[in-house]
Amino acid sequence: MLGFSQSSASSQTSRGIKKKWVPEEGATLVSCMVDLHNVGTFNADMRFKAGYLNELERMLEKVLPHAMLKAKPNLESRIRTLKRDLTIVYDMLSGKDNSSFGWDKHKLMVVVEDAVWNAYITTDILEEIDAEDVAIIKNLEEGKNYHGCKYNVSLDEMDVSATQLQPLKPN
Image (cartoon, rainbow, N blue to C red; front, side, top):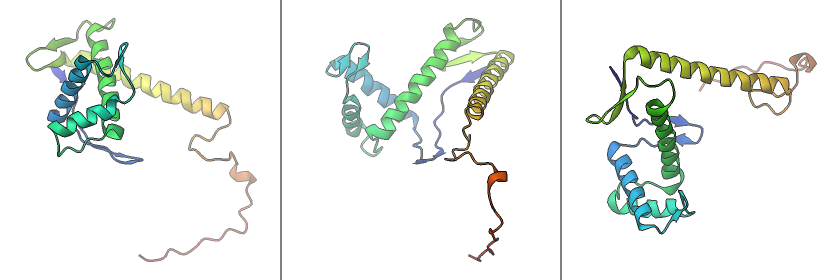
């Protein structure tokens, strides 16, 4: 049986290095969020009021002073990831056609047979590819350059006769 759990990872993004969360930090964040909810100061309907991230930052600073977790981008990004992951797990356990998924209460993770997992992942990947293809086609149909160029100019329309190659300079 295959188990699915959220793992922490750091990666390079366009804005720099993404924080790698360790399990203790994640558990402490969730615990502080529960405490913040129970106090009620920042509750608004089914959400938190504006400013709750700064309060969470202060709470975490007391418990994990060396973690240096900031409201933005660290907490905001991690909460967004937790919400996304919760949605995925919820869909696995209660979504239609997902009755093969189960919950291991000792390991605290979703479990499923390998064949079911492979079919689930394949479907998910195909849906992502389809969504990317639709976005590319839409951009092309609207005359937009998919790579973010400001102008949509064909190479045939450019006068490159005066262009000369420049020799490479050694480092």
